[in-house]
Length: 238
Image (cartoon, rainbow, N blue to C red):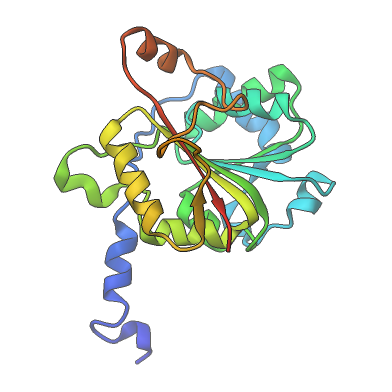
């Protein structure tokens, strides 16, 4: 009997891995999204099952790498990649229609400095991304899991932060944004407890929305209704 077969061994780890920070709601792809997946995945898609990835080889150049977790339909990610052609962008999203929409929009804007995964971000980070290889990690508007009994599903927690620290270069940035004030406070509390990071905010805990993060239609509507959005940028210092 191997260690993995013995009762109780690694059970806790397996239970924790089953607690996802997302729910897979797989809507139907449009014809355009499906066409984009078929045509552009071979050149822009990355597969978790392929294991460790050499990003310099994937992009055909050595450049700063920005990785975004949970890019939704990909509009802002594509616009960021278009605006910063000197950087390489990697996006991770679990929802197929969003990945298809992202590829379609990237094709429309002629973006070539973007690659995407359709998989769980925690597993991609663990199995595919080299340590100290990322210049910026972006986590925008993750599911806040606002009910207390669901807080264990929040992605920003000790183990995840440690993983981000491992993948960031020294001096690399971890940029988060949320429109849930309680989740923003949770993020600050978790990051303040985490070793190796320093808050870049000069006044209080939060920073103004940086120019490189596009203002979404949803966010603009929220501003008009008086809703807040909180940006946090922490730098890996050790």
